[in-house]
Amino acid sequence: MALIVQKFGGSSVADAKRVMNVANIVSNTYKAGNDVVVVVSAQGDTTDDLIEKAKEINPSAPKREMDQLLAAGEEISIALLAMALESLGCPAISLLGWQAGFNTNSVYGSARIKNIKPNRLQAELAKRNIVIVAGFQGVNRYDDITTLGRGGSDTSAVAIAAALHADKCQIFTDVEGVYTADPRKVEGAKKLKEITYDEMLELATLGAQVLNNRSVEMAKKYSVELEVLSSLNPVPGTIVKEVTKMEKMLIRGVTKDTDVALVSILGVNDNPGVAFKIFDKLSAKNINVDIILQSFGRNNTKDVVFSVSRENGPVAAELLKDLSVLEGAKIHCDTNVAKVSVVGAGMESHPGTATKMFEALYDTGINIKMISTSEIKISVIIAADEADRAVSAVHKAFIPND
Ligand code: ADP
Ligand code: ASP
Ligand code: MG
Figure 1 (cartoon, rainbow, N blue to C red):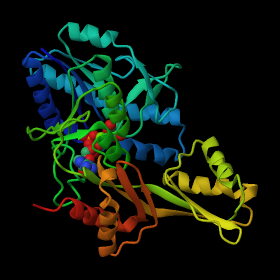
Figure 2 (cartoon, helix red, strand yellow):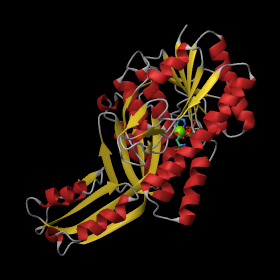
Figure 3 (cartoon, rainbow, N blue to C red):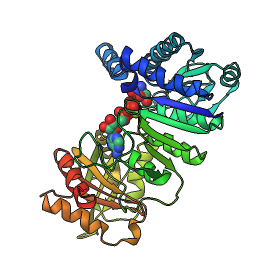
Figure 4 (cartoon, rainbow, N blue to C red):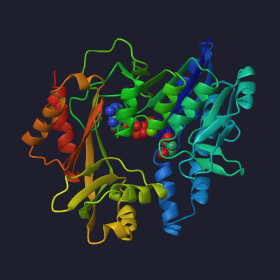
């Protein structure tokens, strides 16, 4: 019939009961006559627990060894699921990333998939086996285990769907689909029937962890149709695909991202080349800059403020202290900030969108530190402890309760 890739996240396989529940879903798909490849994450909080274990021993452990350690989480899940399927009378075989042909680059901790050699996967499917693949991991050219970064199992699933030209890629999780905001945190969040790749990519990049952003990028590139759905409640989920006739809703979602730091450089000499030197120094150290604000020059000085990931904030501030063109400027890093965004294709043709967002924040007494807009999103940087209130207020303004 069809070739279906099914991915189950950590909470879906958290304990023996949940593993059996997943085995039943997979078994039903298989017994309906489909070929099935399953991708699983580590059980529950296993990955976090392994990170804690490492920290107790060496807080700055080599990244290669971290990958070796973290890959163990998924190794446990695949074997348990294979055993569960066996108990239901389904032939199943579990494969680690390297056994499934996942070749990656060598950036330990956030490796990128270079290619998938699908021979083994295809051979097992040809034997009518259910193939269970460890998500989040691959192997590099030194035969070392690598991991794809947090939430990377989504990308593993999409990559397999693309490599095997699967008919469908289903991402099973602990909520019923993609919502207009995190349904665990925002009252009145609504499930979306459909969302475009571009909108989903923005939501994922701006903090909606329900799908990993790289997985969405890859799904768009290879036209893999994704469905996000619940492993606990068998109701239709959300389809992620190219633009079609969508529900009439201008705003798709509101997100928050707390992995943000603001670096401000005050009193910079107002000369040509300063911006170049600042950002050249950061890019040389692979520091990704998100929003940049430069004030209008006055009295021969100007201010430059930019946002980076929380981890990179202090690193960037330290690096810039050595820059000679910044002599005399005050450099400060604030890690107590968050980014709140509204996402929706079509907002460019609706001039009132930004005003509505700012009004909702004003009514809630929240001060905006920085603003950034694109065709498809508006983001503001605000104090971290106000982020949840901001998301709720902005969500209410755009997506009122029925
Ligand atoms: P998994 O372990 O299945 O990969 P994750 O924890 O990575 O699951 O992602 C699912 C979680 O994403 C949900 O429990 C939900 O709290 C959170 N989430 C954040 N934003 C959204 C959103 N817009 N729609 C749905 N879920 C969201
Ligand atoms: N187990 C990994 C993590 O917790 C990968 C994943 O869940 O997708 O990040
Ligand atoms: Mg996830």
